[in-house]
Image (tube, rainbow, N blue to C red; front, side, top):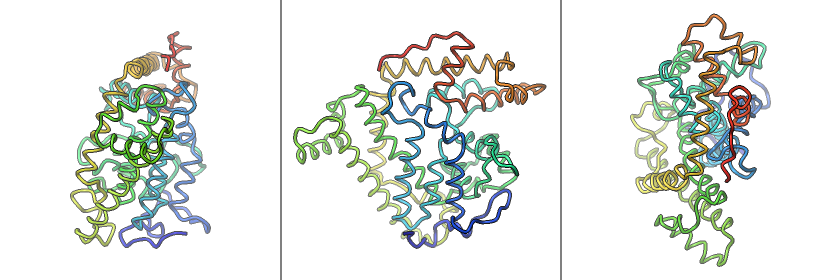
Length: 388
């Protein structure tokens, strides 16, 4: 059952349309159609083999970019429905938000950004736009997936308005299909952005316990986590650690979702939000956490950095992952003939800047294991399993 949409929701029947106009279908609204196109794309499938925190070959139970995107979409959908927003749009933005991510998670992104420093840098958000509007080539009539204005706006402004240092890929698309970059995105896009925070904090804790990088007593050093763990133990004495941690994550997710709903409803009321433009033209987001919840997120993030992302096992992997990206970048820049023919054909006779962008597109699209294999084949690099 679809809830009635609120007056400030994005209505699929009032979409600002697609770059190339198409006839609507009788059985899906325009945002559902966007979602289907995303799910059927090659780049979406490849997310299964891209790292979240742990490199893909280290175990089947860890999150990867695909399961992460699905978890974000599920949180965003619930929140959007509760607020009377378009849950189809919130879900579609969430599914697409990481499609431009490199192999090896943030380590890969950092390395590619360093390699691209002289050529305008690399940012996964802009890469998602490039993928969705150009690189994904499936349809007869156009490049890209020809998605709605609202969906692309939500990806481009994932972290708020873009005023300066606008990445090249977003600039290029914006020139053809003005995404109003200087305003905030829809409430649906704002919901998707914060659902990302809710999802990854929880699942990174769970994965870190599973990988035995942290124990429950580490979690108990954080006061509010200790309180929740106490509640779970009281209710279920002697619970196995995996179940205990899962119950903890449930408490955390409920807390963050409830907080976000309360604060956002308050904002909608206080700011007399009645239309989408009321949301877009504000000078701050309408969908927010309270100060307390914000502080808790910061605390969890700091905990994860200290205990997980900077854990020696993860750092070893991070170091190796960066090596792979740098080596491949240098190799393809100097010997483009070592790329597959269709990529090599793109590069022939190009100036250095364009060559770098094509190389960066090629590397960003790789899965972890493909990048490792390419590196082993071309650079004869030993990629050791770091023994999780």
